[in-house]
Length: 188
Image (cartoon, rainbow, N blue to C red; front, side, top):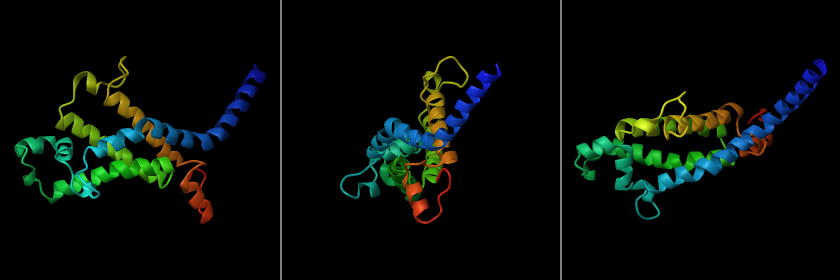
């Protein structure tokens, strides 16, 4: 029995060492494969026309982010103020920039933390602003695993937490810059 345990622990220790280098890179790759284009497509719906469309958010941007306010204003988008414009514009930019930073592995921990905040706000708006409930909302620790809010977004946040805690990994711009300036940490 001792030889089995010794072999198991030898393999486990090797995986621990490998995991420290590979897990963050795989987390970034999984983020790119599953969420990068999701967030970019969502951000694209918020852009106004032209090159500087991010500065002139679409009506849909206000509907998505401020659904109750939009209804209260009778869909008169001229009633939205500077506060609403700032929230919509920064949210749209965040939806483009934070995922890109994660995929590149640049300021990975900060970008992943920002995305966790973004997902939290997105979920609150979906639940309270858009009235998402029932099977779409779901519940943790039930037998169904396909709810768009609790189940899906719990996995998103877990993936992002890996990046907050581990950094961008061996193949990241963080690692390259850290080495260049003598600041490299284990996870970068």
